[in-house]
Image (cartoon, rainbow, N blue to C red; front, top):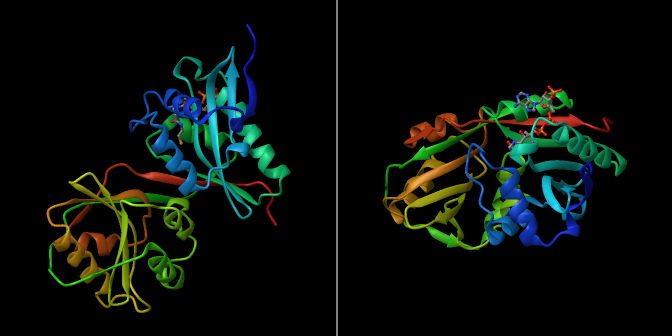
Length: 276
Ligand SMILES: CC(C)(COP(=O)(O)OP(=O)(O)OC[C@H]1O[C@@H](n2cnc3c(N)ncnc32)[C@H](O)[C@@H]1OP(=O)(O)O)[C@@H](O)C(=O)NCCC(=O)NCCS
C-alpha cells in the first residue's frame, strides 16, 4: 500500500477538487456540496490560491485537502478535511504541517483560520499544531422590524468606498472589504443617509447580511434605520448574519433590531509563523 502523496491543488481540474472537497468534509456540522459554481465562488471571494493549496492523493484518489487563501503577508486555511475512513491516521497533521512550512518559506507573518467551536477534532488538531484562539465569531438571525423609508440601491463598489472609510479595521477574513469586493449578483448594496448595507438574496425567503456600516458617527441610529428600511423593502425575509462576526461587535445592535444569536459559534485561530 502506497503512502499518500502531497501535491499542489492546481494539478487537478476544478470538478475533481469540488468533489474531493465535499468527500473530505463528509459528516461535517453543516452540509458541504460538490457544486462547482459554489466552489469557484468560494475560491474567488475568499482569495484561495489553488497553486498554494494542497491535496493528498492515494492510489489516484483525493483523500485530503487544504485550501489556502492569501492576502498580503497572511495566509488562511479556508478549508481542511480528510476522508472519513482515513481520519485519525495523522494525515491532517501532516497536511497542515506542510501548509505552515510553505507559508513560512514564502515569508508570511501568520496563518489564520476559523473553526466551528463544537468541532472538537479540528480544534484539537489546530491547538496541537500551535494555533491560538484570537476571538469568538458569532452569527445572528431573525426578522427585523419593518419601517418603510425610501432607500437608494447603489453599486457594490460605491458601498465598498464607505466600508473602507467607515468600517471596522481588522475584521475576520470573510467580513473584510476584500471579500465584499469579490461578491456578485444576487448580492446588492443599499444606502440610507451615510449608512450602507450589502446583502445577498438566498432564494426568495432568505437574506444574508454581508456588511453594514453606519456613517462617520456611530450610535446615531443610522444603522438601524437602514436595516429596518431594507426589511420593509424586502418584506417578510428571514435575515441571516453568518457566524463570522466578532462576538464583541454589534451584539446590542442586532438584538435591538429583532435578531437572535445563533447557537453555532466559531473560533478564529492564528499561528504566527514569522513573528516580526
Ligand atoms: C479535522 C480533521 C481534518 C483532522 O484530520 P485527521 O487526519 O483525522 O487528524 P490527525 O489524525 O492528523 O490528528 C492529529 C491530531 O488532531 C487531534 N484530533 C484529530 N481527530 C481527533 C478526534 N476525533 N478527537 C480528538 N482529537 C482529534 C489530535 O490531537 C490528533 O493527534 P493524536 O492522534 O496524536 O491525538 C478531520 O477530522 C476531518 O476531516 N474532519 C471533517 C472536516 C473538518 O471538520 N475540517 C475542519 C474544518 S475547520
